[in-house]
Length: 236
Length: 90
Length: 199
Image 1 (cartoon, chains in turn purple, orange, cyan):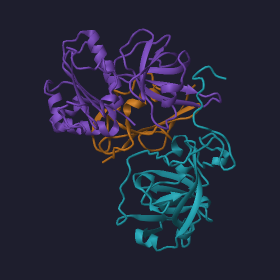
Image 2 (cartoon, chains in turn red, orange, brown; image 1 turned 90 degrees about the vertical axis):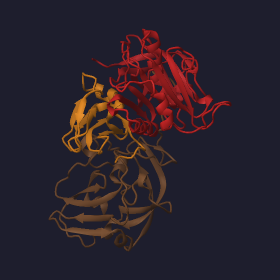
Image 3 (tube, chains in turn green, purple, yellow; image 1 turned 180 degrees about the vertical axis):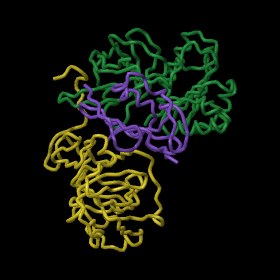
Image 4 (cartoon, one colour; image 1 turned 180 degrees about the horizontal axis):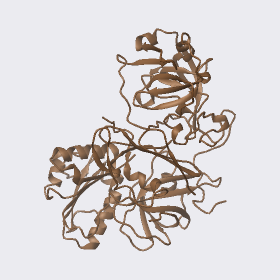
């Protein structure tokens, strides 16, 4: 496997919420990827200074088309530039696909639980979309933790009501009117509900900020899930 | 026990290691020589990326590997001691 | 002009009088770590200086606090390119710890709670160039910034200013520390931009 830097042209930028964007690039020679994998993006300043950051792929393989989720971090060096300044039509460099652990392989048929916190839903969305395309019979369950309804990504793809996806939204700060669950962090009760449809060996994918991933991992093992079935990806 | 404030995990080593390894490394199996915990490279706790990447056992924080990228080189140690390998890269 | 990422500047890397080459100024105080933050209660804290012959000088927290204290204002420069001006610290000059230490060694390895190490020439710790500090901006130094006590050697890149400092070993040979053994410069002078091994 030779992982090389490839030119990537920005062709579309889609706002997901006030600070989050999905960026669609075309990457000539892109070898394809698995849902859950990520890429490294390299930016180069005029004086030769370079910065490299990792971003998750938000959609299954689709020819040369690569979709990334970018959350603008206040005072960040790279993410605000990608989120709002990089002109559509211009190029960056990407390296990938990367990662072979936090992936879901289409063709698997067991039920799966995805647990996402904030922008941690990006690689999980690639899994949901790939699952939908594959017409897999295994049920997909998603537990998605966001501060408020305005902070959710991919509201159409991840809406409850798709027959192949069972969605539970957890609002940590502010719930929309009519929501039964009081706002607050993911609890053991939330995870007990979300895991009810799983088999003992069903895989669980957890992605989000480090503290979120640690807390969810502890709650899941506390509920008796085998740690070997839990795959995690942490950021910032 | 390690705290949870600052670390990422071994998934983020995939790109840096791809510069010097020809096999995707994140599902490589590792056993901690200190506490005997085992698991994939992807589950190591990784501190960094600056000034370098330090991957540690999620159980006892024993150093599993260190990687530093500079302009023309990747430096790698397996374990926490001295004796780094310096790879010339583009 | 390169053809990638038009308009990307990165953080400002201009040179000013107080700014070593390749650095940018920051008002914040970034936290970089190579491992979990050690929790070191001052009740069990100890600082040692061990000579090349194996003689150990040790101070408890109370003994260290009873030594003459100095306040110092310094510019600090991190190899990850941020510089922070006029940082205010309180602690004990390394000259004080070395007053009664008999040594012919030229180098030291500084070691920290948590396992971190860094190496320096002994002369860079003496003559008012280095401190063991426990207070930053009038507050006890927080664990994330190296509390209860860290080394402060402001004329070298900040990785030399070991957090959670535990002891100093005098050595005849220069032994690369944690970052020095994976490509970072053995000396680390920011004004000569000694970042990496070959610089």
